[in-house]
Image 1 (spheres, rainbow, N blue to C red):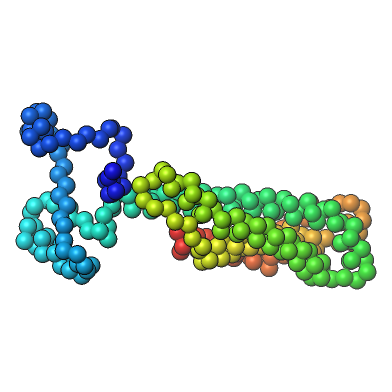
Image 2 (image 1 turned 90 degrees about the vertical axis):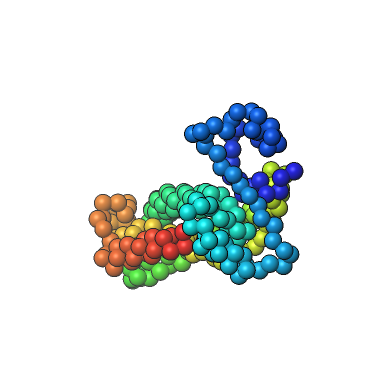
Length: 250
């Protein structure tokens, strides 16, 4: 049982326990051999972080050319921490890619939904409804549908740590504890809302400006060019906000 083995990183070769005399007799230690020795220093109980830092600084000052790499309990596994940080960045990239792919799906779904409501939109405009009214009505509907999907995703995300801790408990050598992280869940909900807005504004903007006569002729919303600059600028602004949030919180 090696409770601190996680600080040694990952190894592909089997571990071998051997005495110092046996190691010397094996002939493995020769000039040119790559050998790394690790010494663990036991400090008195109750030693605080400030005292540990002072000991570390004193050792580095007294032996400047020793070549030591001193690690404390606050950073016992720097390689593992680096791997976890890189893995976190990779997951952030995967999440952003999934958001972009999902956003394209949102745009296609909104376009198909509005195409199915073509007759209703034409009737609204024939009765005197403004393009802004049509835009607002269907934006509210799309946001309600998005809120339902975001709520479901947040609930699943809140339950995942508990499920993962139950599965990993027998795999990793440290206790795995699930928890509720409202900050991360709130950020996920915000990302979902912003993606919905960024990819829904352009189809909604096209629907706003299509005349009722074109809709009654079943011309649809295709081939109408870009929507008003206001909607294009809003979509680009939300996309930039998404990128900024991803960089800031990654």
